[in-house]
Image 1 (spheres, helix red, strand yellow):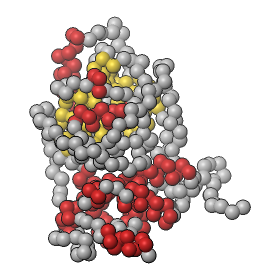
Image 2 (tube, helix red, strand yellow):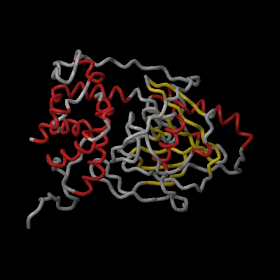
Image 3 (cartoon, rainbow, N blue to C red):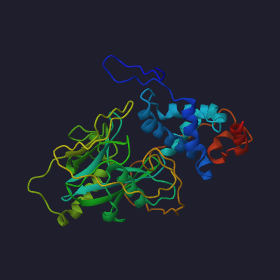
Image 4 (cartoon, rainbow, N blue to C red):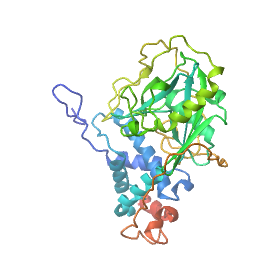
Length: 380
């Protein structure tokens, strides 16, 4: 029988060993790189955000349709795209520096999210990342270009939990810290009912959603910073910087909210089924533990600005964005000691002069596509 041979183990699923075909890579390049708005092609960091969107599409869709396809890291996928995409191929010799600059750039993009508290302010909602060994964090994500802080927070919480915080969000109720060169702001959303439905609206981002007791979260002390673990042994790397100011905020508001005679424990309210983070994904399912939840509300579809972040919208489709005037937010909240991010060394060789002007180190700022050459090669 004609068709793709799929290797199988004696007692396991098909082995994923096949790299994406040239046809598939060409399709991804055309869909996510060449056909995005021209302003998205002006710098390599913006281009690599598009490459990352293509990577998500490959992992979330192509791999589900072809069980032989191999799961790739973003670095591996980026290398394949630069090798196969006509527009990116001239810069393959600089891919190490381009990728390094991209990862450094991502650590400077502001992060917005929310701290969702229950009706007694005793528990907060946390999400666990997709990969094996992931830590818990408040639902949050990186800002899009021109997006306002509170709009980003509402969008990210909707994507990761399926809950709309906008009706309860107050601009003045937020905590903000700066870690390294990255600003992180979380809006405090109190009084959310225990029986509220939560479920992520995107694939392969969240593996579990749970209520956690605030008094069991670690604070930024020498005892807990080593592993960022709480008394229960769970990992809270992105949580601990906010715990002390959160407890101070709760102490001021405590009298406005009811108190239970018997405190409720932490509880998982959504968990992914068969999380195969090393390869394909199992189907998302609402596996509620110790609670019976009603149906999860549908995600609210809204136009999303062009990505200057990592997961800017449900994964897998390129997007165009309306232009929104950015709104600078004051930095008047607790800070974490900044880390110094080292500068990327200059590129070893200068890319073609027909595309770049100036030294290789300015590649991100001076990059331009030679569209005439690209179209000529495609037509040929």
